[in-house]
Length: 241
Length: 176
Image (cartoon, rainbow over all chains, first blue to last red; front, side, top):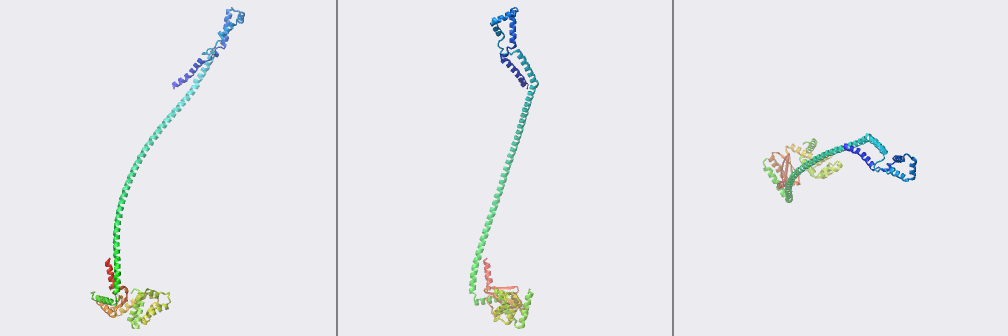
């Protein structure tokens, strides 16, 4: 801050030096030309021992004296130094301006600068805080991401384990079902075979019995019927109660 | 004899037959007619059809029994049918036959055969049953072609099966 203030104070001084260094010669003559001419006239008057008319006459006759005055008094102003009154007025104005600047301007500028610096500092602090917050958020996000990855990995492992278990169970169940199906198929096949044999046997028996019945029926004439009845009567009579 | 109505009709028929003096013949004719009713569903349904005029049903009875049975038998059957009990006639006749046999201290032996038994065969069969069971029976023959040959005798709950049908059935069972 002190460096910045020193630089701020040095700036007007440098401006003053530049003004003095590059000031124009326009202000070199002015009232000093009159006094110079007056001095030269006084010197001529003194040289003429107070004879003003002679002096005027010489000036009138010898115009070179006027030229000499002009050369002596009306010379080009200094390219560096202004006239004294300008220096006084300029210096006064500068001092007034400098005082005003020191008393009012500089504090205002310094306040503005301080406010600006404070704002920048605040912004920097806010930015730092934001960065810290962002870093915290990022850390939290990364932690959450890591947790999520861990959870996802755990879920995947659990899902894989469950899938393996389900697959194992399904395979076992399928094997059991297949065994049951094979067993049932074998049982049904055996039953169907037995049923087919039974049906075939019944069919053969029916055919044989039908044929036998037709043969018997054809052979059962009245004589045979009579013998059958007689045989039955003998059987009933010969059977013990 | 579970049904009092059947028993009542049977008692009435027996009483009429006994009153007419030839109950054995009437019983035999009624028994054969009852067996015909059992074997002929159309005849049974015709006689039991109250939608038909009674005269028409009585005419059917007269056509069937008029020349083949006694007048008492025809009259008794007409009486039962006229009373609207044609469907119960076989049971009434069975009860009447039982009642008649009981009056003679005998038991009815229902004999099913493919052909009718001769009188000699009936007597010998009655004697054989008496020998076997100790009961004095009256043989009532039912012609049943499904018997094929031989005889099936039913005495109450006892059955003596000597039919060809039974032997064929035994043969059928042996095939299983």
